[in-house]
Length: 546
Image (cartoon, rainbow, N blue to C red; front, side, top):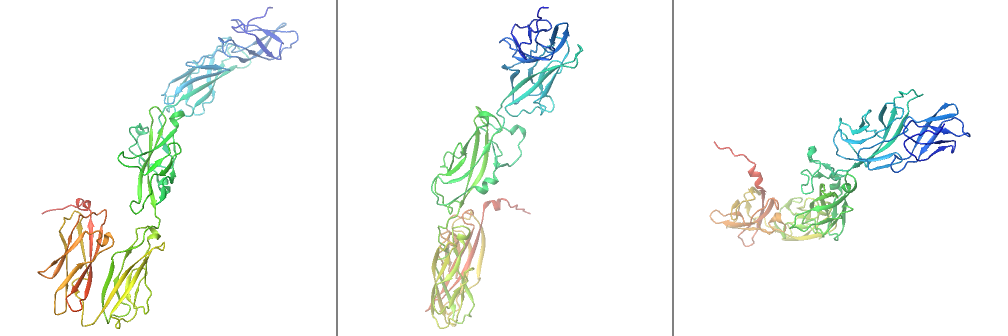
């Protein structure tokens, strides 16, 4: 019997073990002629294909003994697997591509197998479809994306095993099958904007806002609380000091998933910070003074490298940390007081106050008094109240230096002058120990805001008034108020001298001096407390008229 053809090809076959039979190819049912040295057994025949035929593959042949002829029959001897849109075929690997955002039922590929026995063929996906994104038509071999739920493609590719199994209609010992590997590359779509890992969105955007073009940043920037806790720099540090490093990730692939960083700022302003486009490290562009500005709000952007890039936004606040670079400042240039000679020991008569522009412990003030014996006067180290420490009747005049020391041992001193008066010669008496008033910040210049009055118990009732100079904004430095005497009734009025700003200074404490007319003039002091309210306070009030 002459050798019979196996499949439609003239390419040679090799077997394991070698040279036990020869096979030729034709269009009819495949047969192989057994050589004398061989014994009937299963053989694996390797078909080396030409560039036209399908790639080489192993066909398992099952023996059928007919006299001296052993026939090896393959159930799928012409395993031609055809893929729609395939771009590469090698060693039973077929490659095709599908867009990441492809919709339901999108055709991915078509596999086709032929069985020379004429058996029916059933197709299935036997591996690589764990997420269930793909379905295959068992009769036609069409591989599609699933219809429900919606497909969700992730990663660079999927490797599917497409298996063709015959229905064994020809009556073999069991159904036979052949498998091809289908590699489905996922073409990335730039549908993910960069996300800062340490940030949480301030609001939930609808799905349509999940991807925002570069020219239209997200209306809901991320609130980076974790970065806020880390974003700080000590004042007075040199330019280029590192503040912190941000990091954003993009779920897309390739260039669509690469991120570069930037900062948003007005064109007319000089930015206080810069950011490295690759590392996300934020550094300073100037030296900072916390007493001028305590924090800076910055907007960090993360932009992907796509042709139509998407942008992620993170807003954070950089805190300027305090360095003890300021001395305490007393509210007044000098303190003066008049005490009766019979003032009891332990009597508090004057409160001094100092402020420090630093922060925290650097701004904590402790008061002390210059040592001098005997210690007629003393000051409370915490409150600043000056009190009589020893009897003062034998002293006509006492001067001391009061010292304010901050938490960093920086200090300032101011003079205290106390005149001891005879019980028969008394300073003027104020009608009120203190005065309080509330005014809006838009109060016009030269508007009287409060009237004060003191009277003298001596023969001459005249009293002169003076508004004491301050050292800080809260005590009228720079000047925001002035005093004008009222000769008609012997009082004095406090008036506005300059525009007020609630955001700058919302509270004032003015010290007013009243002095009598005598051979030895004596003075008394009162305090005027002024609270400033912003315009928003008034605009939010409702006025009902009847």
